[in-house]
Image 1 (cartoon, protein in one colour):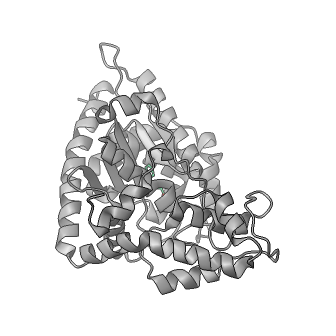
Image 2 (tube, rainbow, N blue to C red; image 1 turned 180 degrees about the horizontal axis):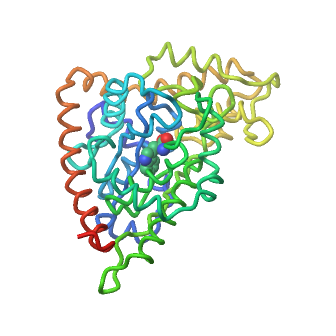
Amino acid sequence: MTNTAATAGLDSDLAPDDLDLDEGVRADPAAHRMLTGDRPTGPLHLGHYFGSLRNRVHLQRLGVEMFVVIADYQVITDRDIADRLAEHTENLVLDYLATGLDPDRATIFTHSSVPALNQLLLPFLSLVSVAELSRNPTVKDEIAHSSQAAVNGLMFTYPVHQAADILFCKADLVPVGKDQLPHLEVARTIARRFNERYPHADGSTVFPHPRALLSAAPLLLGTDGGKMSKSRGNSVPISADPDTTARLIKGARTDTDRRIGYDPAGRPEVSNLVLLAALCQDRTPEEVAEEIGDGGAAALKRTVTEAVNEHLRPIRARRAELAADRGHLHRVLRAGAERANAVADATLTEVRSVMGSL
Ligand code: TRP
């Protein structure tokens, strides 16, 4: 491999079977457009990395066109104030670039810098019922973990806003974790209903039907055994230093059985750590568990800590380099906003036209 140390680790991560890609995408990657995004609420963690970031980079390398939204308006769905928004936004850009997104090929932008994207929310809201929004399982889960006493209107409607993220650029691929599937269903429903209600005069339709690209990596749990989340204090950030990583993994919940095994249903916490080491070392969880054998939780955690720190070393080194040039980060966001605005303006013009507004 001719890569520098900074990218050597990346390439070896990207096993071609990490994604459930069909022949259509493989045959002509450039005919597809992918959108995904993250909320700027904290640093991205290992769950994002294995569940989504690696896939994005893989798709980018295949030649799929990439849009990445930093969902700043989505932050205030479950809290009153978006805390340290600028800092979190910069950190997301750093995580993206350090893990291999290429800003010359990927359009990285914030919600709030693309007005026409947000305006799509209005016609889209008319296409879903209140009952449909109420039973969305991801919204229910987010509400359960919300820090707010009352559910605000933006939380309630945020799958629709997310549909605007996906549809403004007519993305047909959305790499997501399993937990985000219900949102994608909303986007598909909105695309279908919009197309039915507002076809072009020649019968052609405005929106593609976006579909999910699920990572082959099973969902990683947080160190407390719950869903790994950047706002629940149970995750290992990509950007953490090796000592912090060790401390976080040391604090992970396990059980008292010294024999380490891989049994996600019966022993979720231990199996989660085994899985994490396996993902980092590109081995099977069974191999990792077998090797630790009767070593107990302490040996397991040592293995996991080493595996994580080793795997992330080149990414963290690259991240530190990038962090030294904030001007570059801002130029990336400005260029992304410019491209996203051009696309969003064109889509909104088309939407208004088929709706008879012009
Ligand atoms: N809701 C996603 C999250 O919490 C972030 C997001 C915003 C997103 N818009 C999106 C993901 C569009 C996929 C597609 O992480």
